[in-house]
Image 1 (cartoon, rainbow over the protein chains, first blue to last red):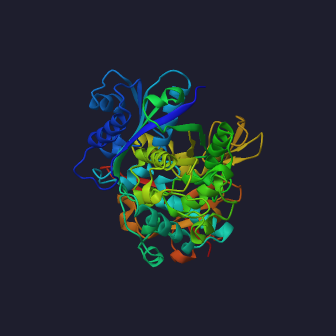
Image 2: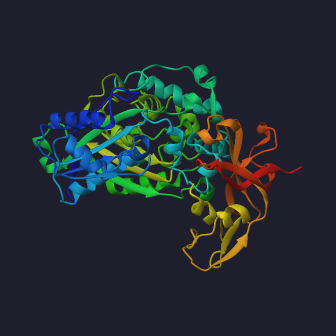
Length: 382
Length: 130
């Protein structure tokens, strides 16, 4: 396998972007990445997208979006793994370049959610339709069940969940691309309306539009495009049982642990080597479970991390410096790429007010559904 | 849900038909061709008991359109005496009492109506033991 690097990134603002279509969003992010690298061609394009077919009635995004760049003819395909689609698109690009099959690959992600009137129903298709959605469960409902199981097992409280939201909003307030650039208080979170008990509105990531793209090339070619490439040291993908009822421990995300184990092994790093991480906080409980399964904290202690400030900017291990899905926004297919862009900027020292001092190794974790798929990438400053 | 799909799911939804793996003993609901525990394919049919215990739960306040008139409603994962786990709404009770450890019976109920034809879709809901 060849060493692989990210050399450029492009990203729209995340939010309710009513004046932009799916293809507008993609084209904005993709052209920014290509322009930043001064790249004049692509060998391949992978587009992470969960459900354009249901959100805007458009499938077959590979050719549509290659054409949108004036690159009809290029190898292009959509990649889907629910909310992990962006992360899996990045993995596809990584393997395409590492294998030697291609030299210049764009990994992108896009989701246009606000054109749909049935967002809750569409998202629920990432759960088990026959065993779960049939009974009226929603995505907040599935994570609420994980939260209640974590409360039973580890004594986690609603306040612990709320500190995750407070932290991520504080970070998001510093991110010009974030959907919510405002802090919220513990009281704001604890008094927000219930969505699926014990989860409240401010424990949930929003419905968002947005796109993100990164240019992936062999490390040996990287200096042609930038002075500061970021090496993709590892990619780990794993799956777990789809239905919550089929999992051994509902309060633990096995797929996240397995994806991390594979990535740590490939990178030759362990959790202690990570300086900054972006994890999939689609709901506050998801960040708590993710940092446990990634080994960034001990199992059962993730509930205290945000409250104690360990995972805040300036803490022992800053998590979701971008604001996370909670504050930055969660256009589902774009999320995995946007996470990689936050780490790319952190390792290049370009994160401005969100910069983690001397960050050398970063990690992203992007998951699908209620944690049935998870993809972890590890990045290194070159 | 088109009617053939609904009809196909009747054994699991109406009769709670599961399988027990003759290799590792795992009980799997609904029936499958391959045991998720040991990948064995020698599976014997088994009907689940219509009772169980709540493992975890939630109360839904923001629902999909077809359940919007029912909010707030409780949904739980219930473990049957055979060790199978399934998701079901918990009804005929005060919502705050739906917590892990609650003993329930599984009763045959209307779950939803689907499509323009309003097909009545049945299944099981959990009701706390008296």
